Image 1 (cartoon, rainbow, N blue to C red):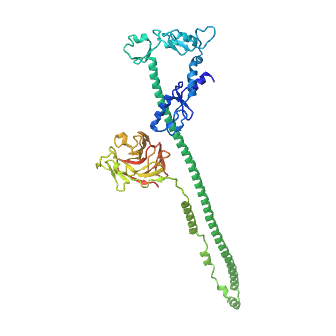
Image 2 (cartoon, one colour):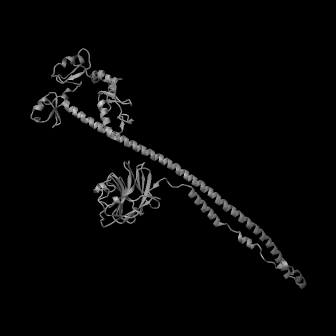
Length: 520
């Protein structure tokens, strides 16, 4: 392993500098003791501890174990490494190139370990890490070493600059002191960035989990709907076979009946033809005696059709019976198959009169709220909305799926949605539904409709034609959806959020009245 790669292995992942008093967590990662202490102190407020590098979680604050072997490597190996990595060689070693350990800013010379030992005895010589451009560390005006930092001008200055008029009276600090302060600021910034990065990673993980759950739910619903429709098709096919079989059976019975009647009528037809021929023969005879004798047979005068009644009684399909079988079968299919998606309705949702604004009237069943010109001046309690005709529900929802409906047909200025119980009860922006981060709402103002959350208004392009809207809440999925109960039901908008408190239904009405009802 090269020295550069080895140096990388000896850098703390928090401060990105060489380890100072390295300690190890149980997950195997190493940090400076001060760095990991600050990181764990930051996590103390959330009562959740994790490794800044691999994010492994710990149930309690992890114990820090000193990594002695790593301490030895840092102490004994690193001091000889900087000059080996610089690629610079000692100015005074003229017979063979010897790696430089330091650069003297006073002499503008690179020094190896041997020359450095003699050179460093003089206090006026200022040493730094090996560099090819020592002039950058000197004052461009006085060609003196930059030793101070002017905090008012934010500039590095030399001893002569500090005493000149340009910086006289300014607060000046040693470069080392200012550098340490800057490092401390940078470490705080780094710690804040690490904390924010952890929060972002957690949000990404939450979103990934929600997406995975949504996809799993979609897969489950796809299977359920596919099974449902397959069962419906099977039942319909069975019903079709049964009804068509009944029709075919009746058709065969009627056909056989007609065949029998037709045969009888054919025989009757032959008998009538015989009689007609005999009568015509008699009518053409001239002998009266023969006419009288042969016409006295009784069957010539028998013209009654004895089969007409049988034909009329059973000569058609039982259409009423077929329709009854079909309708009964369809009713059995619909009652025997669950076609509803799983969702709990809010059948017992009621309004909390203690939260109602002084311009609202709540009905006795606590299902409807109406706006009044008269201020009824209810008790001035912390729960009551002071600036808007708004009211919350008694019930709250912290888990599961719920939906309820609001009849808004009697008002042309309303607002419905959900909110946290911690929503402000005073203030124009803090308490109005949607104009804060603690509530989500759908509202109508005259002829236009919008959804709003966190003061961000989204105008709906289509007008709501129905007088009823549905609110659907999925606590685990973090979804709040609004629907118009038209035919068919039309989706208006869905908000996605990570809920941190239970949710209440909330109504706000400036004209007319609105009514809560359970979902179907």
